[in-house]
Length: 421
Image (cartoon, rainbow, N blue to C red; front, side):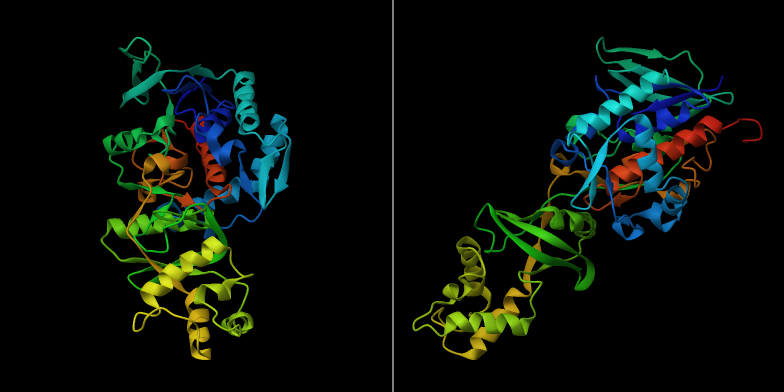
């Protein structure tokens, strides 16, 4: 029977091993002692594993541009993944636009995958680092480091196919340390520099001098004054910059731009559900009170702490030509209304990999076929976060992990060296 090695026992690796086991004997290697270590942390331990409104617009990267994402999704859609989990025995429900395990614990998703691997007799080697992959005589041999003993050995098994699913660089404590990039480069594939994604942004703006302040907003990211993305959701104000899921969704694009030396500006609409004219009328209701301070006109509209954040920014930017004082004119009201519909913040950095949920960048799509095999290396496959594609927050990246894992596993199990070269 054919032999397949899967390197990495995360979401993509486990799914790849399951799919490959249908037509091949599978050995699964991981440097961790347990499978799915990063999966267990997903969604604060609740595991939003799919989204109800998945679209290519939720993704970025060369695998989308090369049409590989579409090819994988056409064969292994979100409905396919849901049916697959149901066949494994997982109960799930929909909450806030996402699919969650019925238990609301990520352990349920992880355990159901582990059970399926056991049923299919996948051979799991924990605490085993794959140091090198050698291609020899229509097959592959692996060099291993056994982390318990720190001993190095050459696996005597010859594998017909190898699937690399070691993850990217995000959350390195879970074992994501860029191993896939080393293997890819050794086999001649190009890798774009990995950067942190789904993380916070840093800004020196005076607005960010409070903590635990939240607001429902609409965001727009500008790169060198050109629009580069938008999102909606809860903004979290921290003492060093903006955070929250809506910020995370733009952070990968900001990271790429900043790395390229480009200017990044975040525009925040604090009242996206109201027009500027409606806000003017709202503010006028408070401005008619004798001696009303500028911050007082936000009573009933924003929390006191958010109002203070806005006031700090207005002192620095809106009333720079005169002393900050009481509201005296309709023109002031219009200025303030326009201001809170478009607060602009210079972005100077993002969170690092320790605080990132996903990796932006990775193995480029130009070197891959639609089944995620390497174009110039028969029998070699890639899956999951190590590839140059990343999605928004909300189950999109886990969908890619599961669907790409299944696609690579299925293709690898059917691979035949006859006529491959």
